[in-house]
Amino acid sequence: MKLVLFQPKGSAAVLPGLLTERGVVDVSAIAGLGYAPQLTMTGIIDRFDALRADLQQAEAKGDTVALEAVKLHAPLPRPGKILACIGNYWEHAQRETRPLNMFMKNPDAVVGPGDVIELPEFTEPWMFMHEAELAVVIKGPAKRVSRQDWRGAVFGYTSMIDVSARGDGRFTWPSGPPASWLGKSFDTFAPLGPCITTADEIEDPNALHVRFWNDGQLRHNYNTDDMEHPVPELVEFATKVMTMNSGDIISCGTNHEGLGALQDGERVEIDIQNIGRMALTVHDPLKRSWERGVYMGPNSTNPEAVQRNRPT
Image (tube, rainbow, N blue to C red):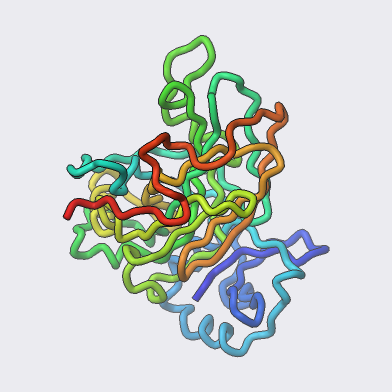
């Protein structure tokens, strides 16, 4: 099933729901409400086994609200942790597996469907770029989980756009030392959504098609079976370092061959197989502009047909 947080138009309430082909089903009477939407969703994750039968009945027979009559919010509006992979896809002429590594992304950077990606008023970065990624939603507490037991630590999946400020390599503060991954943590730089698809709906997270459009131009277009380090390994790696709690996220990295600039007024859309599509707009108060299209130089593949670059 597909879990969402939604706000009926004309209401201030943010409610838990199920996204179905018939519309959105309000499940607040089943799941209850937390003090904040994040707590509502983590409560569902923690109690999902007990709630499953009632949620399935609501999914099949519950009254629906038309999707056009609600605003979808990020399904996890303030995750405790966002761990994001560095690279993690076979690209270009690469023929050796790179070491697995991750960085922390600011949980307060989360926005959701229909929201605005706000580019900061810095002149140092030479470009702001999109990275379309599959994100794993954790069911915790998960600590020292082996890759053989990874399924017990995974509640479901959503999509994330890892918005990135890039200067000379990574973002650096003007007149200061390199700040590296801070350039990925500006407010609004972690769009999540449109839903959480529960793990039972996705048998193999390393067999999903990921696409991303910028004003209708297809850029990212790859399959998650090209990950250098697949999802079971990511779960093992992360939980060796820290305890992952319910609602924490591991974002699986991107195929960089589809990278391009984000610019003022553009509409961007991410779509991941079995999860769904989410659209946002971009606002730049400085109205900067860069060359439009995919930016990766002569070694980049055509964004409409990303080549498989894994070694034979």
